[in-house]
Image (cartoon, rainbow, N blue to C red; front, side, top):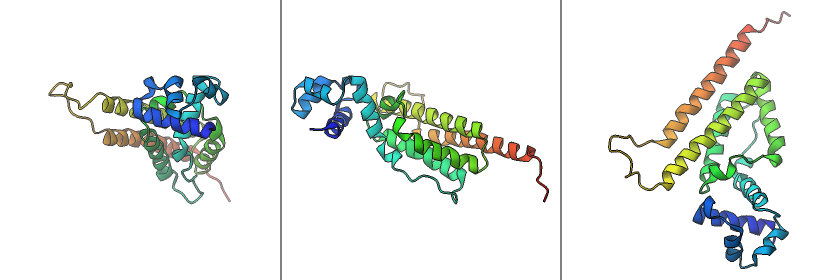
Length: 196
């Protein structure tokens, strides 16, 4: 047994029973070990959850980084969609991720920020846009996964429209991007012209 096997088993357990029911006791039973042996790999349940969150984000962490030839607007949309898709891959993925610190992803985040800034986005705007898009995505997926876990929607009032989560997400994401494009265009227009 090793850390990877423990984390993989914990993620499988998460998908099976949901975040509230994940416990070291259940995980130990699943892995066929004594519960105290898990503490050899993870001192606390919080440490285990942090490792699970990092492993669950692996598909997004493996997504290609932007290149200088990429259009920053298209990349911003694709990056946010990749994040959403990754959160949706795991039951309670947004809850697992919420509040986690992407310590191992800091270099990738810096490279993404550098790409936006080198594409003409003000550094502060790039930071706030990435933060807003990330939090918007987590919130959207939290709502989507909560709806999925509540059953078939039959408990909703008859006149309540059923939400198309993907369309709603895309509409909100477009608004974030439009705001960033507008701020970037205004900033560029206000810069003094360079004379040669």
